[in-house]
Image 1 (cartoon, rainbow, N blue to C red):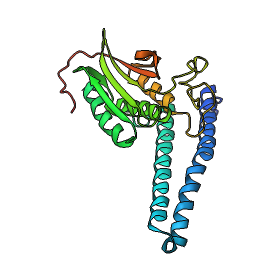
Image 2: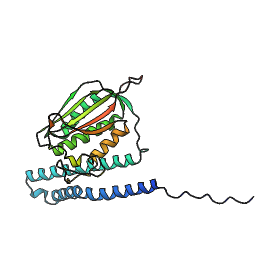
Image 3: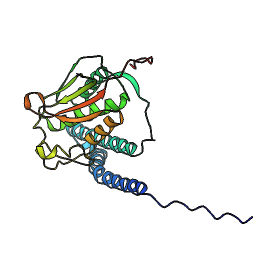
Length: 255
């Protein structure tokens, strides 16, 4: 019997090509955006090491504070890059949805947000329970990204409100700020990947432009949606996370 010819490998698909392009784009963006905070962090540490004894206590504390800020920024950027990579490859770290009270998750997120943004007043108004079948970590991340976005654009000391309620068969978790709002020409692209706009429609500096993109993709992955709505009182911006209300199941509600 004649030997079989070797099997032909299928040609690369457009999906593979697209994935490669996304990886290259992600690496290029990371290299560009991480350089600045990393350089500042290393500069502050080098100054402390070389001149520490000659510096005043106030100067030392200032350098340490700057190093911590830059380290926190690096951590935030790296987390966004990792989540974006996971969204491109859903088989990585897929979480199993569970029955949770969205109002309780939002309340916990509010406490964490106030600690992360002490120069803003962050409050919550919740009517619950709002039972949804989701990945609670994803919902926490969505709300965290929305509050981070609000704190970036809203004036220091202003109010950021989380409002949780029900609209028909949907749980609605809204984050409203008192910033300048979103310009009309930016509303259609604000959720796009690597899009950075200030609240007047122009380009914004800093960050990766992934916060709102990640938030919406996580919302879609949990059978929900994230939209920009008109804020109460017509001031600032209001982002609404909408999730389908779940029917109570035999599984216990996750604390």
